[in-house]
Length: 314
View 1 (cartoon, rainbow, N blue to C red):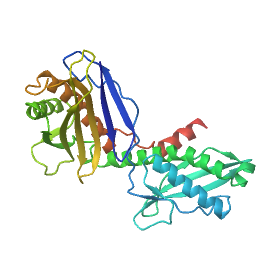
View 2 (view 1 turned 90 degrees about the horizontal axis):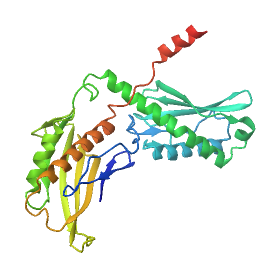
View 3 (view 1 turned 60 degrees about the horizontal axis):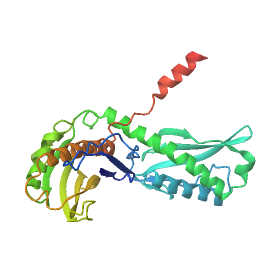
View 4 (view 1 turned 180 degrees about the horizontal axis):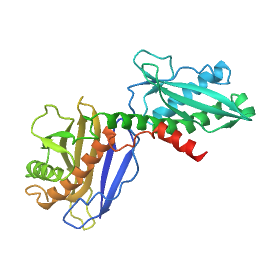
């Protein structure tokens, strides 16, 4: 028998499937290893990409490049828009320069104060190919650039958090847990108590009120008739959703546990089922908080240190 622990995080839209073998009667297993790394939450609320004026492309090609960059960055969960720079927005200065027989795309992350925050190069393109301004070529250039730019933005966010003594890089997250609803039997109470106990083993802190909480966690159980088991016994399909909201009430992520159990087996007491399910959920919630907050991301490399190292090697 297999259990599936499905986890999603926003504004990052990647999906995790965590599962493992079970020992009956426990319908939930340990989450196991991480499946894939979620895209990081970028620092700007919006990233403007104006049409580049120094692109070595005709204006039509430059517009296509900007639009393709915005589309590819959206796939990286970066809120990018191909538009003129708006007051208060971060923006991406895009240009290209000739180096020998190749054109190198350059991307400069600019703050709302028009200060350079970071620069990233793209993969070089043969000059003759670049001069055609071919739509497919520009799309490939944008696809190459998007993860590079996303990585830079992640580093910027981590760098800002590192310098802020009040950020979640330097303290535990304050979490308000509203409890569990919708479970049959004593599930609401058992799951709530078990989750609270398990969450105390994470680096974060539970508090009894929503005041000044960094995140709010809500648990909900839904039970529906399931497929008939292999032995002909009726089954129920159980779904437990652990929703994580940020300080503004926006969903930071949701961990969902799914399983088919013997019908009515949880109508009274949950026992160890609640304990194992809550342990799995507490680890997942902590993981969502880590990823959504970006507190585990590495800051950008020290440009000054890199320059000194380069000089020493000369």
